[in-house]
Image 1: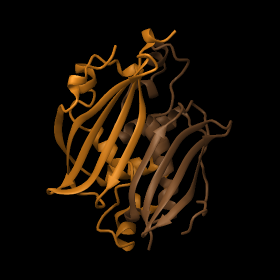
Image 2: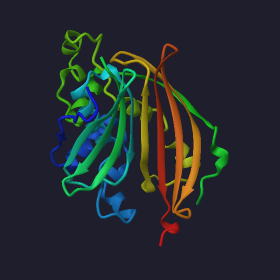
Image 3: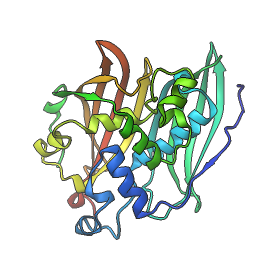
Image 4: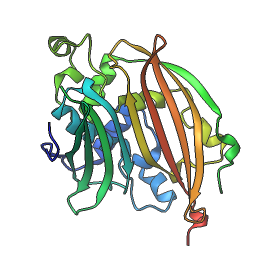
Length: 127
Length: 151
C-alpha cells in the first residue's frame, strides 16, 4: 500500500424501496422518513430518502474488500447530501499518506449524476 | 429552536446488546455484502475468526437497539422527521463477533447551531466494551433542520 494507490471502486445498484425496507429492519433504524411515504410527505418532502448509514455500510464494504477488517483503526464520514430513492452510489477511495505503519485513506460516495453524498476517511494499519 | 447547551455532559441510558448470527446475516444481505465471513460461521472460522465478524458500521445498529432510541430527541423536543445524520465516526480497539455481549454507554458531548439557527447540531459519544475491555468509540453528529428558521 503506497500513497496514490486507488481502491477498486464499488458500484451499487439502484436503491429501491425494498433496499430501504430491508436496511431498516436489519439495521434497527426505524425512522419512518426512510420507509414511509406518508411521513416523508408530512415533512414536505416528495419521497423517502436512503439512510445515510446504508451508504456508510457500502463504503465500509469498499474498505473490507481492500484490507482485512481487523486492520481498520478508524473510519469516519461526513454526510454531504441526501441519497434519493433510485440513486446508484459509487464508492471510491485513495491512499493519501503512508507513515509510521499507518495508511490514511480518503473515501467518497458519489451518485451517477456527480453528487457527492459522503466524504470519509480511514486509518489502516499496514502489514 | 436551539438545543439547550445544558444537555452537554448528559449521560445517556446504557444498554447491553447480544450480537446474533442471524441478525448479522440479515445485515450482510441488506447491504449486499457477499464475503461469507459476515454471514456464515464456518466460513468465518475457516478464515481464522472465532465467529461471524461484526462489520465496520454494525456497532451503530446495536446502539439503535436500546430500549428507547429516540428518547433523548423526544426529551429535547426534536421531531425525528427533521433530523439528518451529519457525521459518524468509529475508532476501533478490538474486533467483535457473533455471540459477544457488548455494553454501550454514551453521553452528549456537544451542541451548536449554524446558518442563523436553521440547523442545530447534537454530538454524542458512545463507548462500546466487552467484559470491560474497549471495542470501539462511536461519535455521532446529528443535524436538526428547523423549518421555521429557513426562508
